[in-house]
Length: 102
Image (cartoon, rainbow, N blue to C red; front, side, top):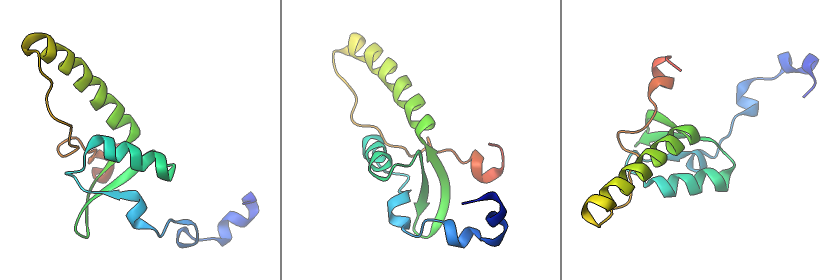
């Protein structure tokens, strides 16, 4: 869009309306969330419970979390010989965006 035309358009004209494509549950599996980001070409998803926005999960959030989990699993596997179950994003969502801290 040319710069001189940007003042003539509203956010409503530009926003995504397919909310199912950009929302996840706080209980969603991390790999499921990564797959959804890849399928939709998005680096962030809205985390919702029902109709309520509870946070935003970003690719950076997930990669940092998965890197940490990978390190901890390596430690745990060396210690016990077994790996923990799959990861959930609950408790790892970025609510800083909602609080204006990002």
